[in-house]
Length: 145
Image 1 (cartoon, helix red, strand yellow):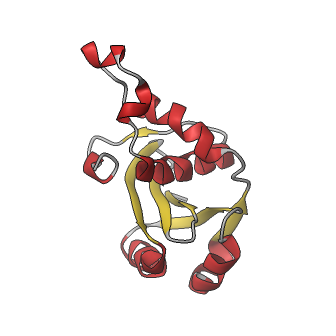
Image 2 (cartoon, rainbow, N blue to C red):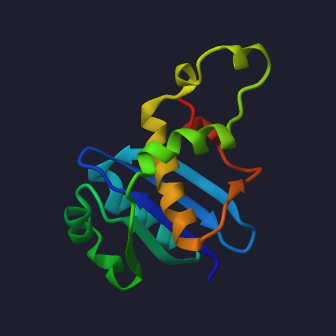
């Protein structure tokens, strides 16, 4: 077991993170259109050593399970209650505000579409009962655009 994928499913967009279990690092994080989810997961599985895919059991999870039939034996549904709410706090743990920006309201710095990837991370951290850190190689532009 080397890497896990976590998905926060949604009707129009999904948050997805790829983590390295041994290093406890987030190797990839992205928010993508739900229609591209199956192809993206299939591509990741073909190039990475992925043992399981953890998906939140909330919004549209049943529809997304049908789209991910090709990984059915590796797919685990997990509780995702309040992950979007908790994602705001976790966002600032990953990307702390520095300097004079600390004087401004934190909500100015959150781009809501990034919260889907952070929600996927929270689902995974709850599943593993552990916290993950950003990999040195991660492209944070996928989180901060």
